[in-house]
Image (cartoon, rainbow, N blue to C red; front, top):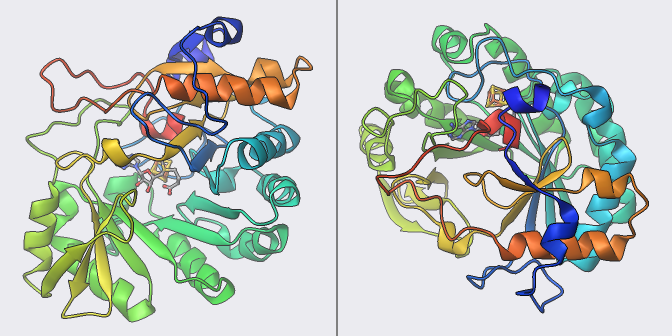
Length: 354
Ligand code: SAM
Ligand code: SF4
């Protein structure tokens, strides 16, 4: 029942996928289009302290039974397989809200012990981060992405359905004094927060954070997304230009989803991720594991492959790695949003892990 209401997808039974004859020959996570996955996103929970309208339903997602969630040891094992056998270079924990897991420090520590040189990060709304940041850094976390869409308290409360901007800002303050890297702040703009984008950018510049705007994708649990009402990247740029000069867009590397624009001639930049209006699927380098332990090769594809049952049935690392390769081989070419026949996936962003 729970998995169905979470939007549980078409699940490939593990033995079937491994029997396919058309198989990748590379040891890495390559697909039929020639893309190689280097970036692993692991969702650790469906729970969240906010209920952003573009992500969660008002009542939150149905709870995943505890025994269905991957444990820190199981997550550590997947990180080991991914980094030692499959060429993954970067691991990010997400959700739902990763800080909702009381054992997030254990997840990070298990992962760090098996992947000492890998970039380990979290994507978080920062609520409660002020109390956890030291423990997370000690456990081995080396980067954070924080989501914040507006610095206007009432707009924040409307958008997230919770009046908790103050808690988010104290989490951000604590993180920025503890970590070495500049914080990355991600913002999804909606029509109602569009005019606040310049204030958010001014705030980010003042505090030394790197801001990126992300186009809203059709991944909300309420299924209210419409192309006609979403804020396209060009609209974000137009509004920012009312206060800043934006020039010389560039990408730091071809797989980077964000186009960086120089602000007022530089050196500071603002990133724009036009996932809907200028898709970058051809350069996608991601693979995902859901909180229940399924491989999800694309945000928009409901085809998933169950690894949890393999982890719990004595399957060795080599076979699990093979399953992962086989799943990635079938990664779809693109999200298909431009097609008339496009239908959003069953799972919403919070149930996949953004
Ligand atoms: N709770 C954490 C947070 O908000 O950072 C991590 C999970 S959240 C699903 C990860 C990212 O997905 C956030 O930056 C959020 O803004 C983004 N997101 C959620 N729904 C989205 C949507 N419909 N379109 C684009 N981005 C979305
Ligand atoms: Fe929670 Fe993040 Fe989704 Fe907002 S975007 S509801 S903070 S999971």
